[in-house]
Length: 317
Ligand SMILES: Cc1ncc(COP(=O)(O)O)c(C=O)c1O
Image (cartoon, rainbow, N blue to C red; front, top):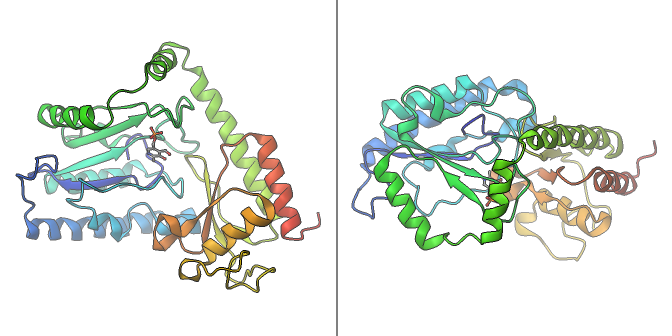
């Protein structure tokens, strides 16, 4: 959520009983429900505010699902961001107000802090009275193109939580390879100009991909370019059917989970077009009917995928 987290990567936990409290702290159920209702209400408001942001946003970063995440800090793992939407300062302030009102913790995954194309990048931790109740998580993955190297850091103001987080990290994710650590030092000590260069390139790839989809996918996919991250989360025309199967099964002849159009499309694109993508439904039920592409690949590869789409969907341009 911080510095304009592009997606729904935050969830809120009961601050009075830190979830890292080794089980000693019990969450008061009535407070949980009340907070959940408030978060859900704010989520709907945020959704309304973002209504002009296109269909892509309809599953929103803070659907009612966010409410269910209250108190679920431990054991809750997050998907990577599906839509690339960026929360506005006003939306973040509303969340911050709820967190303050109910004395909540906010866990904020800030992986895409440097990959914002449009709008400003706001950290919820930077809002009044928020840093002390926020647990911001950072990674070198996106800013320095170090995905897969598992190097990141946390910036927790609260001493007790910081100590406990250190303890957990020490026994779980410790021992980052020394070469990776040297890479991180190099990234921090080197010119930071690479971040802007990478962002500019990603923006160009985004625009290339969306222009191409508009031109070559024959209207099968719709959606607006995201304000951040590097994913195209596109709506599939509901009338689309896999021509090779009649629509209800995959190319291999096997039925897929829930006979999902997201899955059918992904199977089709991968098997027939060698286009890598992910079913939207993999990010939650609201993602059904969508497919996600990553446009961080180099321009040549994107152009190849678009060419492949053109052939698959029989578009003559
Ligand atoms: C939102 C989000 N948070 C965190 C991560 C994980 O980053 P890392 O490579 O440091 O594990 C990703 C990576 O895809 C991500 O998309």
